[in-house]
Length: 60
Image 1 (cartoon, rainbow, N blue to C red):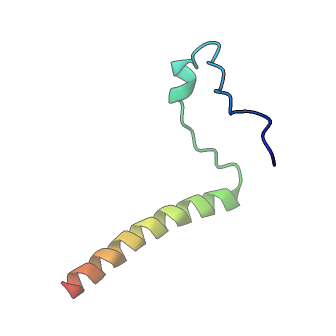
Image 2: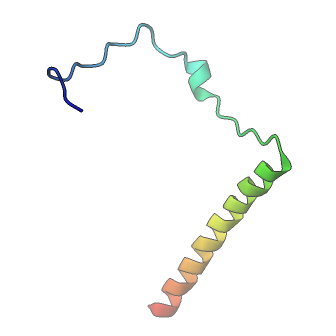
């Protein structure tokens, strides 16, 4: 891919994004599979921290 000229800066946003929309974080778990994957990831992260902390205690 060849550029024809120097890169142009992005245009400034027309109006700021509303704070009400930026704050609203929501996890949508519509199907049972998504729920299993979500909770499995949480449990996996907790188990990983526990295993790593046990390995650190045994080695040091």
